[in-house]
Each structure stands twice: as C-alpha cells, then as structure tokens.
Image 1 (cartoon, rainbow, N blue to C red):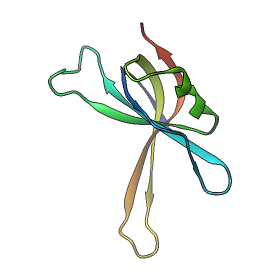
Image 2: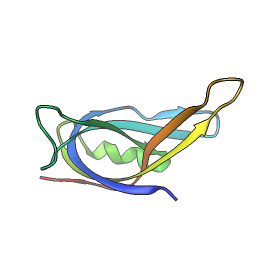
Image 3: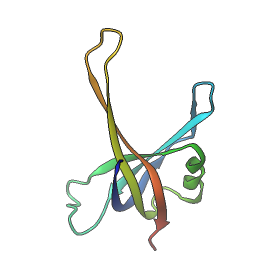
Length: 102
C-alpha cells in the first residue's frame, strides 16, 4: 500500500493530458513550488506531481500561480529488462484531493 503525503504550494506549470498505449491510459503532470514555514524562499523546492486516468481533468480548474494543497501517494518500482541496468521509478500520483488556498 502506498504512503500518502500532503503538500502546499503554488502551481508552477501544468502539462497537457497524454495518452499512453492503446488501452486509453492517460497521465497529466504538473509542478508545484512548495510554500510553508519549513520552506526557504531563497532555495525553492519544486516537485512534479501526476494525475492519472479520470483525475487528469482536475487541473482544468487551476491556473499557474494558484496556491493549492494536495494529498498524493508516493510509490515506486524497480525495472530491469532486456539486459539493461536496474532502474527505480518513483511516482507521486493518485491525488485524493486538491484544493485552492485563497
């Protein structure tokens, strides 16, 4: 079971919804510049989050510059195939909610 985390920040960029494969799997990435008392504005942290499937439309309600709070799942997997070196893929996905902070 993935771990859930919450962040607060300003929407830095919003990507387009992209379809992968022939089964209709979709993904949409967006970047949040973290804010809050533990963040140093001189050295901002930017994180990329992703929405999958039906959740891709959630970002239609937001614009660059909006301050949001997001709950997301952190998961990862190892992949090694075709004689390639093992690689770790980390995913920040599966938002349970995304709310504007005004």
